[in-house]
Length: 207
Figure 1 (cartoon, rainbow, N blue to C red):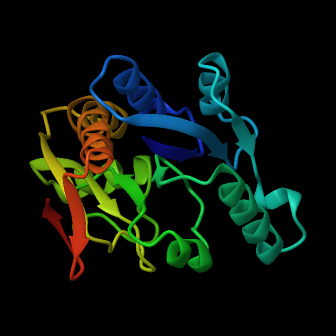
Figure 2: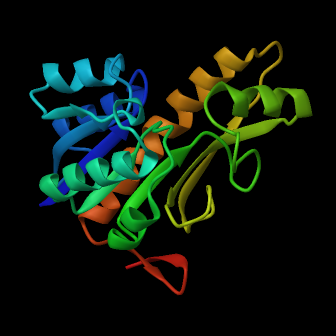
């Protein structure tokens, strides 16, 4: 059984997709051990509570220094003892110590086809605004393992989504969620839970 901890900052739509996929059997051999948010107002925490999943808010604003926050974050993660950490719209830089401790055991969903529109400053609606400003015809989402860089870890899955005439950043964001994020994130978790993918020489290989 793969114990996962999901880290979120906002509404938790990807968390909901994961919970639904566990419930309906799309994700097998997996238990959500906990949900952590840096935002006390995150609706994701309510989603977790309604589902009976332990949920915790650990906000950098509650600590005197980033180091203190990082220590508290890592301590809670150690307590939950996950096999896999899932970043599902988590707008906090993961401490390097955590990345090293959970090497190849942290995954992230990013709302673009990496390497396009990724890295520092590209998150949430900003990604979709940039894509529309650039005039691209195809966008999408990427699930990747997390390393010390920003959106630079080994890619697990990608799924393209077409841009349509008259798209606004909000409309495009929703389509990318529905047609890509909510599909490939559960798929990646299920594959990891069942030993179907692993990292070798910095790349994802099908086991």
